[in-house]
Length: 284
Length: 284
Image (cartoon, each protein chain N blue to C red):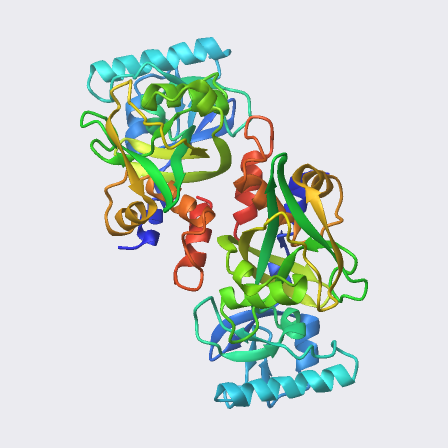
C-alpha cells in the first residue's frame, strides 16, 4: 500500500462505457448503457440514440426541464430502479461558472455522470509538537462510505450556494463551527476526480480549505452524519492513509495534498513524490 | 492579461517538431530537425534516422558516453553552432529516480530536450499586515531572462546533488542564507513544464519550497546572478504577475501556486480559479 494507491481512485473509469448526456446540444454528463436503458421508457423527457442521450429539446426552461426529470426519477425510484431522491438539488452545466441548465437531485448525479462540486475542510491545530488534525468518523447509515474516516467538514455545493457559503453551512452542520471561525478557512486549491461508482460516474471537483483552529475548539456534529471526532497527530493521519483505506476514498487524496502543501513529504525521501504531485492533478 | 496567461507558457510546444532522443533504446529527450542536423556530423556518437536520434550503442559506460557527447558540444560551440558549455553538468535519464544514462552540460539541455530539475524557493515574511515576499532582480548579463524579476532563491539540480542540498547551496550563493535557516525551507510540491526555447525544448520540473524568514533577515546576492532584492507585499507581487510579464517565465507560475496555497485567490471571486489549478499541473 502506498500514497499512490490512494490517488488511483481519482481517475478510475472506462470512457468507452459511457455515451454523452447532452442538454441544449451541449455535453453535460456521461451515461452507461444501463442508465440509458432506464431512461428509454420516458421518450417525452429523453431522446436516446446509440451516440448520446439528449434531454428532450421541447423542455425549454430550467423549471420545466428540472420538474420533468425529477418526475422521471420519482417513477424510477418507486420501481426500485434508482435510489430515492435526497431532496437536495445540484445545478448542472458543462463547467464551473457556466449557467445552470438543469437542477438535479444530488442522489442521481452519478446516473447522469454530471459534474458536481463540493468543499473539503482540513481542520487543524498548530501546537508546540507540530500539527494535529480533527478527524471525523462517518455514521454507519451513510449511503456513501459508511463508517469511514472523514474530514472535519465536507459537503456538496447545493444549487444556488457559493463556495464560501457552503463552507460556513457545512461547518455549522457537521462540526458546530461558529460562522466567524468558519470564515477563517483559507481556500488552498482544488481537486478534480472522475471515478466509477455502482450507480454510474462521479465527476467531482472539491474546493479545498485549510482551517487553523484554536487549541480550545472542539468540533461537535449536529446533523448525525458523523459519529464523533478525534484530534490526530499528522504522523498518525499519514500512517493511516498510507497503510489502510480507512479514510473515505475522496478524503485520502485531499489529505495527501495537505501533506504536500505543509512540507510533510520530502522529495529526497519519498520516491513517489513527483508521481504523487502529478497524479493528484492529472486530468480525467 | 490574466493569471492564466502566465501559465500558458508551461505547456507551449509542438510535439510534431521533435523526434525522440534515445539512450540504450530508451527515450530521454526530444530533438528538433535543426538539432538533428547539427549532430549528423558525428556518426560515431549519434545514429540519426527520420524516426529518432540514438546515442551510439558503442558508447558503453557513463564516463565514455558523457565525454564523447561533451566533445561534440565543444566542437559545435567552436563553430558557433551552439552556446559555449557552462561547466555544470546535469544527470540525464528517462525520469526522476531513474539511473543517470548521461552527464550533459546544462547549457545544452534544450538542444537534446532532456528532462531537467530545479528548486524554486519562495522566501517570505509573515508580518502583522500579512505576508511579504523577497523578490530578486536578475542580472542584465544572464543568458536566460536577463533583468527579469525572480525568486529569492532558485537553481538547477546539478548531477549528484540532492534536492535539499541544492536548496542549501543555492540559498547560500544567491541570497547569503545561512545553512540552518535554509534547512527550514519546506517542500510544498512541484511543477513540471515543457516549453519551446530558441535552442530547443525545456522539459523542466521544479521542486517548490516555502521558506518563512525572520523579519530581521535580508538576503544578499553573492554570485552576481541577481542585482538586488526587495521585500514586496503579496498584493504587489500578485498585481505584477497579473498585469505584466516582468517576472521570469517560470517564476510567475510558481508564484501563482503560492497564491493558491496561501489562500490569496478566492474561488468565488476568481473566475479562472479551477482553470488555474488544472493548468498549473496539466501534463505536457
